[in-house]
Image (tube, rainbow, N blue to C red; front, side, top):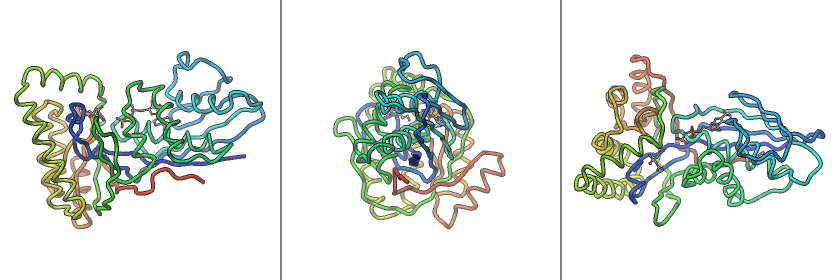
Length: 313
Ligand SMILES: Nc1ncnc2c1ncn2[C@@H]1O[C@H](COP(=O)(O)OP(=O)(O)OP(=O)(O)O)[C@@H](O)[C@H]1O
Ligand SMILES: C[C@@](O)(CCO)CC(=O)[O-]
């Protein structure tokens, strides 16, 4: 018996870093997916295969002893088959580059939680989300759950620390061209750098948080109106704030400049220091924006908002 599920990756559109200090952030799911197939097998083992490796282990091993990026899948399979007399084989197929801020880990956990648990009973999206967050905690103890939430429900979402998540019902019609710097970053150390900036520049940081909050309220209105041109101006403004707090570098600035030649605006998405930027476009400037990145030899691809979220087969 087999069960299959897929889940989208995500980008942070606005508000990264400031969200750590209570400002609202806006995220969206993207139409690049991870698909997971789970199958019951007679032998009592957990076998996981993906483009990043292979893991085969007996059930009931303590999760702390597993040193593999496939650990979240082992956690999920082990939880489901605990007292049962069979094993699980898992196959992962991914369209999402790993470790550059596009939510590959959450897409894995959401699709994995659905494919594995649906082998036995059909669970609600809320139940699958709970399981996915548990699995993601095997790699990031401190996850806010924002990424798994947007990967499960799709579309656009706002999040702030005090009020949690809420879906934004608009369906704006833009394309994002994502360019990958291929520079690895540690979210933890970039966030620590911002904390240091804040400590040394309290008044300026407080003003930037106020400006970012104001910008986000404005963005929420523009999303409702599908006003992509003006959204682009807010993208450029948000990037100026990110430059101020020191999470950019020469390579990212060069990519943003390239992205801005044809698009409505470009900015870092996620922690910065490396990872990805996006350029905001519509049908009129999509092809030219891609061409600009390619001419400068930057790896890039275009995405749209994914409104479906978790899909099961
Ligand atoms: N193709 C894949 N096969 C198996 N596991 C994967 C795959 N892609 C991602 N993962 C899981 O996700 C982890 C990468 O998560 P990481 O948070 O570093 O990157 P990300 O989720 O792409 O970025 P971010 O969390 O900043 O959006 C991997 O270590 C692995 O556990
Ligand atoms: C930089 C940050 O805002 C987003 C990282 O993708 C950190 C966080 O919110 O935990």
